[in-house]
Amino acid sequence: MRGLVDLLSHHLYSSPRVYLRELLQNAVDAVTARQRVEPTAPTAIRISLDEAGLRIDDPGIGLTEADVHRFLATIGRSSKRDDLEGARQEFLGQFGIGLLACFTVAEQIRVLTRSATASEAPGVEWLATSDGTYSVRRLAPHERAVSGTTVYLTPRAGAERWFAPDLVIELARDFGSLLPYEVTVDTNGRTIRTTDSPPVWNRAYDSAAARRAALIEYGERVLGFTALDVVELDVELAGIRGAAYVLPQAANPADRSRHRVYLKGMLLNDATTGLLPEWAFFVRCVIDTDTLRPTASREGLYEDETLVAVREALGVRLRDWLTGLAAQEPQRLAAFLSVHSLGVKAMARHDAELFRIMLPYLMWETTDGRVTLAEFARKHPVVRITPTVEEFRQIATIASAQGVGVINGGYTYDSELVALLPGVMPGVVVEKLGSDVVTASLDPVDGADELALAGFMATARSTLDPLGCDVILRAFFPASVSALHLDSRAVRNEQTRAEIAADADDLWAEILGALKSTEPRAQLVLNHRSPVVRRLATIRDRALLVTAIEALYGQSLLMTHRPLRSVDTALLNRAFDELLGWASQNVTGSAEGNGKA
Ligand SMILES: Nc1ncnc2c1ncn2[C@@H]1O[C@H](COP(=O)(O)OP(=O)(O)OP(=O)(O)O)[C@@H](O)[C@H]1O
Image (cartoon, rainbow, N blue to C red; front, side):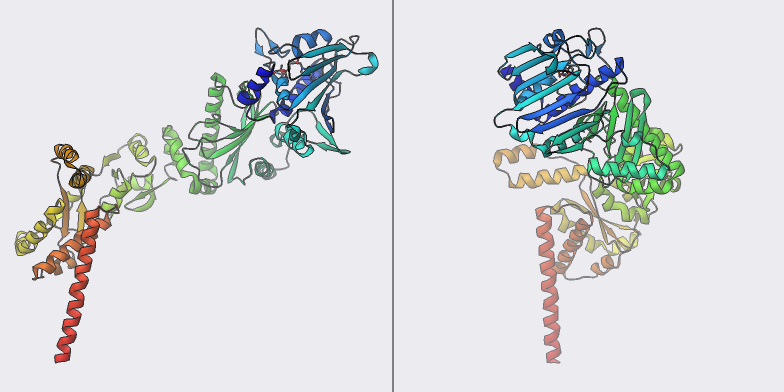
C-alpha cells in the first residue's frame, strides 16, 4: 500500500488536491446508481469539516459487506466497469483506484455504508490505514440507519492544510461546480453551496444578447479574461456542450491552447490540450462532455478515435462560425480579424474554401499598401512575392514605381497562402520576385550620357570593387532613390564567408577558401534620374568623389533594412567623418576668404 500511495501521489496525480475530486466522484456515482433504481431518492451530497478531519455523506447506492470486500478492499476493482463494455457510460469512475488518492493527505480512511438495494443488509464499516492494513466490521442497526455512504478522512501529519475550510470550498467549487447534484460544505456553523448547475449554456434566456452576455460573464469568472467574442459549442454526436472564448489579444501560434474540460460535470483539467485542431490557438474552451475518456490520473484526455472526431467537429464548428460572421456580421468579423488574422491564416492553409471566403477580409502588406489579396490580385494578375521582409523593403519602392505589384511574403503563413491563390482565383499567376525582375525594369541609359559619366563610373567601380560590389548606371523612378543595392541570398552568404575567412586562423581560412563561391556579386545601381547622382558626377576632386560614393553606397545599404557588416559600418563612419572634414574645411576656408576680402 505504501508503495502504491507513493506511486499515486508522486507519479500519477499532479497534486494531492485531487483527493477531494475522487471523493466527490464516488459520491456522485453512488447517487446516480441509486437514482436509476429509485428516482425519488434524495441526491444532496454534504461535506463537513471539523477538528477531526473531513466527512462526506452521500445518499447513494451504498455497499453490502460483500461489495466492501470486492470493491473497497481490492485495488483496481470497480463496480463501474462492465467486463465486456469497459467503463459504463453513466459513471465518472472506472479504474478502481480513486479512493486511494485520499491516502496522499489522510492517515486513515473510514467508510460507513449501507446498501440501498439490499434493504435488509446491515451497515458495514471499512477502516483502512495508509500502511496497507484494513478491517471490515458489520454494524449494529443503530450505527447506520440510512442507506448511502459516509467517508471520514483523518489528516496525515503534515497534510493538515488540505483540510482548511477555505481550500476545501475552493476545491469543491473548482472540481464540482457543474455536478448534477447539489454539493454543500458545512464548516464553522455555515453551509456553503459549491455547485452552480445547470451550466450556463443549458439555461434559458430571454434573448440572444442576454445569452451571450451570460456566457461572456461566465468566461470571465472561470477563465479570467473578457473574451473578444464567444462561440457556443454544441456537438450532439460527441455529447459536447460549452463555449469557445476568443482571446482578447493576439495569441502565439506556437503555444498549444489549453482548455477547461469537464467530464459529466466534473472538472478534468483547466489546461487540457489536444481538444482543438492546432490552428485554433486563438480560443480557450470550457466544455462539458460525456463521451471523451480521461487518462487514469483524470488530468488529461485519452487520445483515441473519439478525441480525433471531437477535434475535427469542434474545428468545423469554429470554421462555420467564421464563415457565418463573414456572411452576416462583417463588423464582428473585422473586430475579430484585427486581433486574430494570424489564426485565420493558419486555419486557411488547410482549408481552401475558408481561404476563398476570407480573401476579401484578410490584409496583406503589398506595394499597393495594406490591401486584401483579392483586391491586389485583381489589379496585378501576375502576383509577385518576396520570400523575406527585407527583400520586400529593399525593392518595394522601386518595384511599385515601375508598376510591378509585389507582396511581402516574409510574414508567417503569407507565402504559403499566396501560393494557394491560383487555386481559388483562376487566372492569377504567382511568381517569386528576384532582384533580376527589378533590374529588368530599370531603363538603360542613353549611350552618350553614359559616356559622359565614364570617369565617374570608373571611380565608383574601383571604390566598391574591394567590397564585393559592382556598379551599373540605370534610369528609374522614383528619382528620390539615388542608388539601389541589389543582391541575393547567395551573395550575402558569400560575403559572410569572405568576412569570416579574413579573420580566421590558417586552417579554417583554408577550408573557407575552398568553399569560395563564384556566385554573382552584389550590384549598386546608380539612378541617372537622381539629382544627387548627377551632382556627384560633377565632382572633380577624386578624394571627395571616393568619399561621396562610399556614402552613397552606405545609404543604399541602410535602405535594405538589413544589419550591416562590420566593414560596411566602418565605411559609413569613415565616409561621414570625411564629409564632415570637407564641410568644415570649406566653412573655415570661405570664412578666411571673407576675412581677407
Ligand atoms: N461513496 C460510495 N458509495 C458507494 N460505493 C462506493 C463509494 N465510494 C467507493 N465506492 C465503491 O468502491 C469502488 C472503488 O472506488 P474507487 O474510487 O477506488 O474507484 P472507482 O470510482 O471505481 O474508479 P476510479 O479509480 O476511476 O475513481 C467503486 O467502484 C465503488 O463500487
